[in-house]
Structures are given as structure tokens and as C-alpha cells.
Length: 200
Length: 81
Image 1 (cartoon, rainbow over the protein chains, first blue to last red):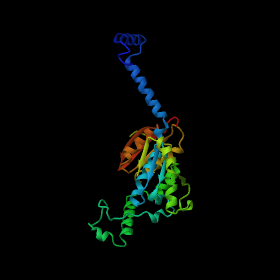
Image 2 (spheres, chains in turn yellow, brown; image 1 turned 90 degrees about the horizontal axis):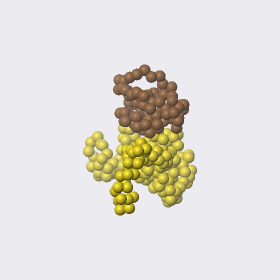
Image 3 (cartoon, chains in turn brown, cyan; image 1 turned 180 degrees about the horizontal axis):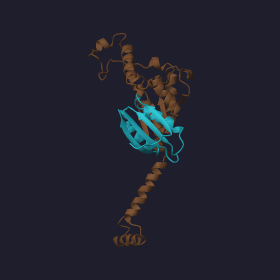
């Protein structure tokens, strides 16, 4: 209703008529806000999260799993789509496959500064990985295996990207129980109906 | 803190994020509507996580406090899901 089609006096009389019935402009505003809020609560998208896990290192395995667990805890339907190196996370051999490389990772805390030329020597990757695992264990941070187990318990859907499974020559048996297989379109259809979508 | 009797206790002491909330979630599933969950945690993140978790599930945070470095929360499960 633009002012052109609705002359000002008519608006005033409408408002007067509304107030006569005991409904003020504030009431109308409040009713509309309530309705929107109610519709928002009913909207399943507010309770749906679609997360992509694309990295296959020990440090990057944590964020998608922590967020997936937390989302399920607050009542959301969660799917995590594992693609490319992210497939490492749901591989039966994840404990061995997930490593951390100190090379090119200046953010990684080291007991003493170590130049990249030393970090790239053989044995440094297992050492750095063991360091991170023991540091996390000391602080009682859950392991990747524990996070996966908890995610399963709260019904997080773990979905492996079929294309990258094929590219890397994996078979369904290479992955932990309960993993589903799907393509990018299936993920997007789910993501379209999720207010929370994260690419990790 | 008030004296509240819980129906179930979740001891999430020494667990780090997101495990206190996950432990609470698993316990909550076994709870009847209106029953009370008592949660113990030492993870500082739980100070914001547990109230947010309770609110998201429509539950009521009856009381919370700290006792010797242990955070204590009482959450009443919502009437209905």
C-alpha cells in the first residue's frame, strides 16, 4: 500500500478504526513479530546443519567433528560430507592416517623454534603428530575416534563423497561402519535446507 | 546455590569441549520431561555452552554455580520435545 493509492486521510481513519477495536499499532507489530518468530521456530532449516570436511590432517580433523557434535547437542539434524583428504577422518585407519606436518605451519607451537629445513627431515611428521596427540591427551581433549563415536551416538550422518572415494581407490569397506555414500548434488539439496553450512 | 534434587547426574569433570555438552545430551535422552539433570564440569567453555545448550533444547537452567573449581548446573528438561 503506497501513499499514492491510499490517501493520507483514509490511513488515519483506518488507524482510528483499529484503535476503536482496542488493537493498537504496537499490538499489530507485536503479533507480526510473534508470528515470524513462530514460523522461524517451525522452519526445519534452523535445526539443520550441513558441514563439509575436506582436510585430512590431525588438526583439521577436529573442527568439523566438534561442530557436528555440538550442533547435534543443540537439537540439530547434522550431516558431515567428507571429501578429498577429509575421507581420512572416517577411514578405518584414521589413527594412522591423520598426521600433522610442521613444515609450512608457522602457527604450530614448538618447544624451540625449528627452521623448515629441519622440520622437513624424516621423522619430523610422526614426531609432530605424536606431540600434538600427547598434548591433547594431557588436556583431556577427546580423540578423533571418540568424537566420531559420540557423533554416531547422537545420529550425526557421516557421508563420504563418492567421487573422491573412487578417485583415491577406496572401497566402502575402507570406512568405519555407518558411513553413507553420496554425491555433491545430494549434499547441496541438504545444504539448501540448512541455515548452518560450513566448509572446513 | 539452592538445594535441588537431581534425577540424574552427569560428571563431565576433566572433559573438554564439546564433551561436557555431549555427555549431557546423552544423559538428557534418558530423562523424562520435567526431570532434572545435574551437570558437573571443569571446562571453562561449559560456562557458556551449558546455558546455551539448555536454551536451545527449550530446557530451563534452574541454577548454576561454582564449587572449588567445579561448575555445577541444574537443568530441567522441557515439558515436551
